[in-house]
Image (tube, rainbow, N blue to C red):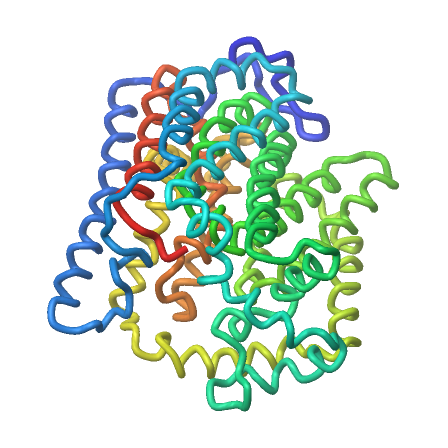
Length: 474
């Protein structure tokens, strides 16, 4: 972008910094196709909402109040409305130019601060109690059973005894539906004096918005600094911020993002010490992510793509060692991940998962990605997918950063497709898939620069409409 001090990142330089970006064609035909792609995403969401309303005209067959989202139609405003509008206007008006001129070391911090302002404002649209202090108490459910972890060892050793719905003193839905690491996070906060809904929400939002920093680091290393700078405002204004601030999945998404960022650091460092430390740290966080949410084992797909983009397998032994530490710690403490997952599958079909129709939710889940990632993400994703044949035919040979820019989003798409095909993600994927969908707004960096403010405005309007027209369950 204009004003950038450097167009490449250490470890993986852009192959042709002086030439045109093969992903950013600015002709009228390409721009029309961008609009068509965004329109198709909007049409998918509208179609699934219409079909969902029609299917539920007589009965609650989809088990969702406003399919494909977990929400209720309830237009409202709140104390967060004015600051949310102000933040959106500032990022739309000044985000691209600031991202292009700010020194790189300051850019991730500025993006994190902006993402924090955006996420807190959106959460406050629902008011302090429902949007902040009471949300994780009412919906996340982790905080309601912390007293059962007063004796940590026995609680972990008997964790699997309480997963099934017909077991004695069965866990609430979200404790049963996640590995022990999820609830232990909030147990840890409580033990250090940060108990209650307000501290939990502040932790989730602070951690969740740090994803922006992790994604920028990974993008700079793998796809080049120019693309990372262009992506920054879109990462900040991602509509998915509506759910980052009010569900533990925002925190899970950040852990996942930092694991991939550290893998990218490890794969692009020449220093053996730095490579080993980053690789081990990335493995630790990958392992931790799998003990926060069962579905995050699918991080193996984007993790492999990161290594392919960096053309290096050197982080693998260090990452495996880091992940092994997490697995060993939980296993020695008495928590059996595989047994718990098997029981969770049974519990899933004992509840709504057993009655929600797969035929609807396969497409409904994809529609929630349009809501979380935004229309600009799909316009940019159209350009990424259009470049896949060129990568497959090696027409971008030598342009390593451009190839990485194509492959990286595909890794997240494949992970979500696998989750969708599994049948274990029927509904509520606007929050469950945040670890994957929040990377997609970076694709908007490939749109023509003169269109960036317009696409940013589309992202902001989508988030504001979602949060003001719907009362989200998360």
